[in-house]
Length: 229
Image (cartoon, rainbow, N blue to C red; front, side, top):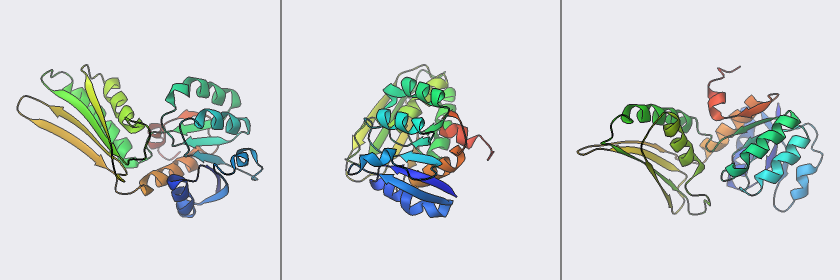
């Protein structure tokens, strides 16, 4: 059984906790704002920590966990400016990290569609491209990490033109992302819609099981292309 340390116990942390038994996982401990000292407490064997906290917490959480030899799944977004330094921390500690802006299997496959679309539309200067993402009003980072992931996928595929990126924050929207290409007389759109946040918790649990015993810095693409090894 995979033993997990939950870092953060908001909506996502509680979802991970409730779904953990379905994935053969046991919660070894929980770190909250009320008991931050639990991050360094002895919880017995911990295979992987799952961090769904705040962007400003990740740069301090990860070195502490890496120093204890604990692999970490990071589901928080908005901390990427610190990534080079954190990668160095993980390399020196000899631990493993899987960081993702979005743990949805469908979204990560959607990113592959975004790449292919960018390759196909790139040579046609008459089409303009955009990304529009919608999330709940409480989400702090805008555009979302997922929108930036899609933008990067399109750019890495060689898309040579500007991509307009827009964000909407309203109500309780779990997450909707649309990429589009608009020409003189036609529009093509691709949309991924999340129906509930359980998809992120399930993906994080799958990622945590996969990360046990691994060393290095990984993405959901690494997880999806590992063929279950």
